[in-house]
Length: 240
Image (tube, rainbow, N blue to C red; front, side):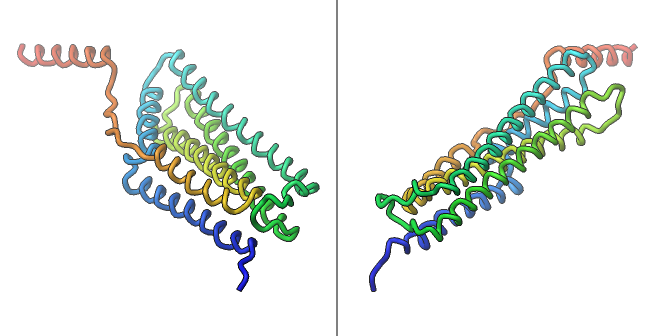
């Protein structure tokens, strides 16, 4: 039986995608069960403390700072959404002229019937990234409205949910771009795609894990001194 180079795509491409899917399922399991061991869970702890301090603040300077922070996140999500949509347009141009990837130096399946599958797979990843970044921007805008509402009794958990969901959609958009990177290497053959998938898993594992203990956020020193004075005054009044 003669081994054709087209068989490599049937073996290496599903294997590379399976490795990345299994890793992200493992990361999702850790995120929901033991979130403090993941970078996203570590960041969510800081975000909750930030939202709590901002909602407790009464001065306009703190509110303006919070709106600037959310505005920066919103601008980043909007920029990446625009980049994803632009790359979708470029894929359409590549599909019209795909003779570049039919070179004989590419060891793999370069048949014209296979090229649309590669383009559509890459297009789906960029569209998913675009949708996730748009949703991230929507969540940050919603948090903007909640924080800037004057004289409100909005629960802190509502703002926390909007901020954390915005970060989660941001992370999902980045994951879609990571998958798109591996699929982009598929155009140069299944071997570069498989090697990139393995390297991407090692890279993501190093940046997704967290070994630091969660910080127990407390009030600032001025607030602690204020409460200490109140307790001392109360204790003196009780003794008298």
